[in-house]
Length: 68
Image (cartoon, rainbow, N blue to C red; front, side, top):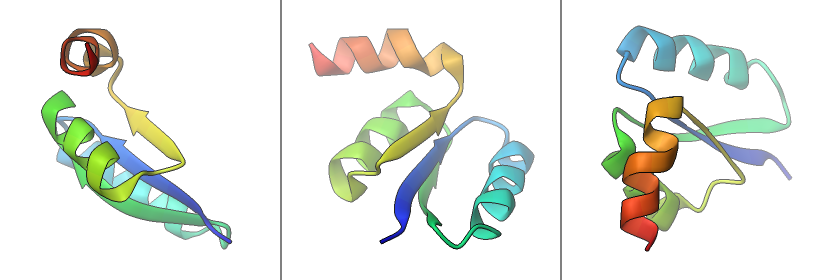
């Protein structure tokens, strides 16, 4: 079973690069991507990824406010 991953970063080029790297691995699936913390929350709710790769700026502020 593949490990489902998601990417959240405001730089499209970064997201695309990470997605390409993830897709090179058999056991990793790039399930979804978003460009900010709010989209990361939606991705988490809808796709339930095993791993979320995200810009550290989103990790506390938006995630904390929305999960409280």
